[in-house]
Image 1 (tube, rainbow, N blue to C red):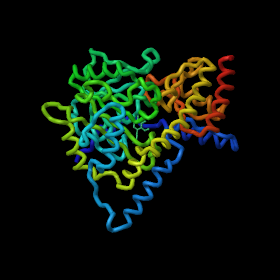
Image 2: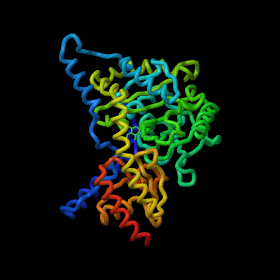
Image 3: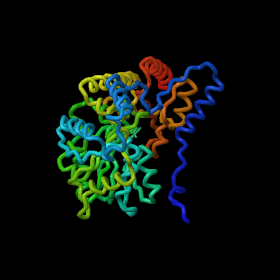
Length: 398
Ligand code: PLP
C-alpha cells in the first residue's frame, strides 16, 4: 500500500488558525474589549423569507407519501436547472439544460472537476489566490505556475504567451482582491486558452456583487468562451447558502478536447461519485430566482454593499489605495507605511480591536496587503471604520 504522497507537499494551512489564536490571546489579555471581525468570508444575514417558506413547504412534502422524494437526478431537478437557465438568459447567455449541473457548492466542484484532467497538465493560478485552487492540484501532484496579481496590473493578471498552461483558474470578482475583469480582458484570456488548447475554470462565486453593468458576470458573455471554459457558481454569497449548501457548474457541450465532450465526462463523474443535492435545498435555491426571492436577496446584497462603501469611503478619505469594495464584498487595501501584512494585522488588533485577514496568507504577492470584508453588520462595520480612520489617521499624520 502506498499513500498519496502529494498530501505531504501541501503547505500547512495556518492562516485562519493563526488569526484565531492571536484574537483569543488578545481577548484573554484585554477582557471586556470589543473586537470587530472584518476577516470573515461567511455571510451573516439569514436566509430570505422566500427561501425559508420554500424550504418549509418542501420539508412538509417529504413527510407525505405522495410527495416524498428519494434519490433525485444527479444533475439536479429540472425545476432548478430551468430557473438557472432563465437567470443566464437575462445575462444574454443561452444554456442547454444538460449543460447545467447542480451541486452542493462551488468549493466541491472546483476541486472535483480535476478528475477530468490528466495529472501532467500545467496549472496556472493567480497569486494571491483562493487557496483551494492550489491545494487541490498539489494533492493530485500537478505542476502549478503563478500569474502575478499586483498593484501594477490592478490585481488582474493578463495572459503571457511565453507561459504554457493547460488549466487556468480565473476568479472574478476575485477573492481576495475584489478586482473584476472587464469583457475585453476576459476575451484576452479566452483567446489565450484557445491558442494554448487550455481550459479555463471560471469561478463566478461572487458574480451577484457586480453592480457595474458593463462588467461581465459570466465568462460566457464573452464570445467563444463556451469552447474553452467551465463556470462555477454558488448560492452561498448570492443568497446566504453557506450553511445550506447549493451551487452549480456549467460545462458547455462545445467544450471538446481530444475529441471528447467534457460535458459527458462530468456527467459520468457526477453520476458515479455524487448522488445529488437534497430536494428540500433545491426548492430553497429555486425560490432565489422568483421575483420575491430576487428582490429579497438583492436587498441583502445591497446591505453588504453599503458596508463595503463605508469601508471604501474611509480608505478614500485617508488616501489609502485599495481594490474591490464596489463590485465585490472584499476590500484589498495596501498596508500603511509599507507595513507587512501580519504587522498590520497585529497593530489593528492591538490598537483598534479590528480583525482582518493578512494578504500574505493568500500568496507571496499578498504581502503588504490586507483583506477587509463587508459581511459584518452595519453597526459593527461603521464602528470598525471609525476605529480604522482614527488609527490610520494617526499613523499617516492625516
Ligand atoms: N470560490 C471562491 C472564490 C470562494 O471565496 C468561496 C468561498 O468563500 C467558494 C468558491 C466556495 O463557495 P461554496 O460555499 O459554494 O462552496
